[in-house]
Length: 524
Image (cartoon, rainbow, N blue to C red; front, side, top):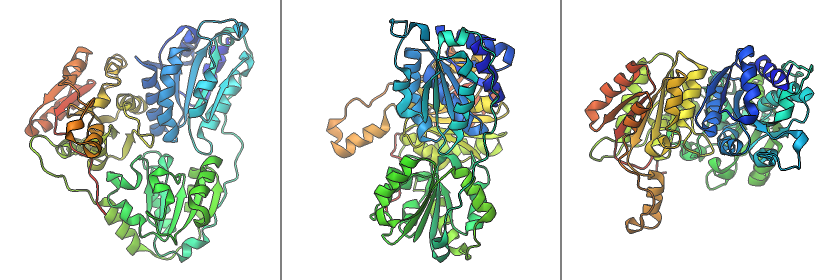
């Protein structure tokens, strides 16, 4: 068999049933091999969109999300999107075509240092030099993507390696059983107001039921964090106030970084000790730098496995129902909506929430700057994908399509700003062609609002530049691409527009002219 056949068979054995791809010269043997292997190809319009789709698919299925791109500009376009997958701790496997090994150093078409380009945003970047090594490389990459701190892995695939014959096929297994370390939480028993923080790989979407089970076992409030706004995440209410009261902090898969104000005593009690379970040695070292003598204990291990072990075997803790309720009440609070004429972001959130309450198997996508924060704060669903700790915007359309590929029966609603929708608007054509319907709700304030607000605060209203957007009819553009579109200019049109979009059965755009407002925030 060809190397491409061995590669695809290894992907299938590893649980891959769909690849998000954009075609190109070197990777056409892989396209061909997918036919016999029964793997679906979702053929996109931009390589970054393929990575976003793979990221969302991985978060919703628990499997490895696979993106396939060609060499040169194909890989170049894809690498930027890896930033989001790396920050969200998502197991993505990026496969890229490459120039042939037997022409190395000769100036072959699109010859370049691919691994050097991607290494900074992956757990590992490897160029596979022999056909016999392909299936093993895939097996190792998929295992690595899920181990420790999950994240993306990149394999560069030279054109000749894909077409050369091989008999070497390695099945992707579960790997050797790993010892799961048990952190020493002896200080936890003496704490009156402990706080347990989970990282993005342990949200309710990606680890259903784990947060509540851990909270019951440890008798401590457990909060999952996945937003770049961290302690100021409007979806977590007065979390900053909670932090100021905590006397012991346990981080499981949650880095002590800018989202936690680096653990600084200005945001956290100076007497509070911290215990950490992190999957990456560099993250532990960073925490040591930030916390110094306040770091109580540190465990290097798989956060999900450790959390599950704690649920099963943690030492019984004193009853802290009062503290748990206090934290629940504080984090459930939402900032006041404010007032302004026209349609406000919260009005859109309320209308979308009404649809989510009655939708079949809803999935909520939130992407964008200020409007993305309104969406995260004002809407809820059992399954959610957001534009994560990286703070990157633009992946929302791809996230929605990846979610629909992961669960074809789901009602997928993607809330995004008018800046966000412009990144990958052409992917609505992909969604139509690939039968991946979803509803994009565009909060359209005709500007890059986050940056507009920065300019207003920092430089004044007479120094505004470069943040305006036009009165684009994104809904009509989506209709032109084969989908459904509706334009909303009055609050009383929202409910009917959303129901029409859902009932259309098509990839849809509800383009809402709204007032630009700063994301909700609590003053402490």
